[in-house]
Length: 171
Ligand code: SF4
Ligand code: SF4
Image (cartoon, rainbow, N blue to C red; front, side, top):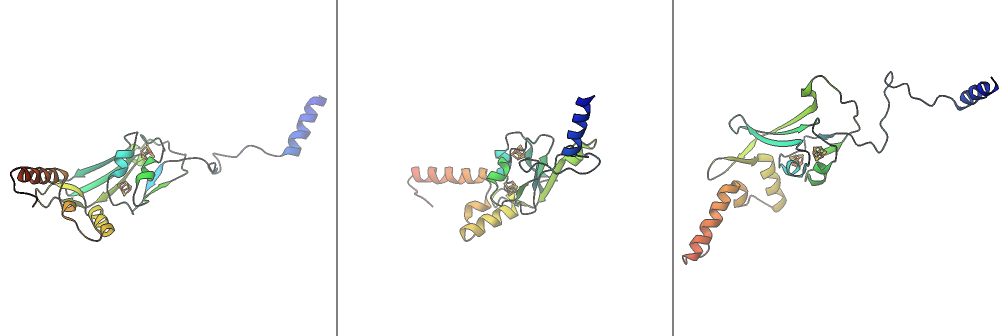
């Protein structure tokens, strides 16, 4: 009996130690790493899709190459933030969201849409207009290679080499 009274008095002295969550919101710990969110500063360069180790990011050309969509799947994401490390636009922000359970999978997908850039030679979509424009701005103007898809650039390099071997030299 004395032991119980001692315990009760100790509890009254200490006060409440537990949180009323889920009846009231509870802040995440400062060190908690939640899913990233992709901001409108994104230019659709696709660098984050190559860095993502979990296959949570994709850059897809849809609607007959009329739109480029960066898609992030929170369900696949492991919250490592490598995407933020490689993003040249600082367009990825860490969040402290932890209530992710849902019966609607669409709520776990974020999509950003971009207008595609089409190759000046073959017409194929190969990047986004914002990515090309940003790159041009960083180097002081549009460069020839920026307007061509990787395939047409490779063909051009090969034709320069072939021409050189025939004695034509560089164009
Ligand atoms: S946080 Fe990691 S797993 Fe999630 S999208 Fe970024 S790179 Fe991929
Ligand atoms: S700008 Fe950043 S977030 Fe957008 S596609 Fe490039 S790396 Fe990813």
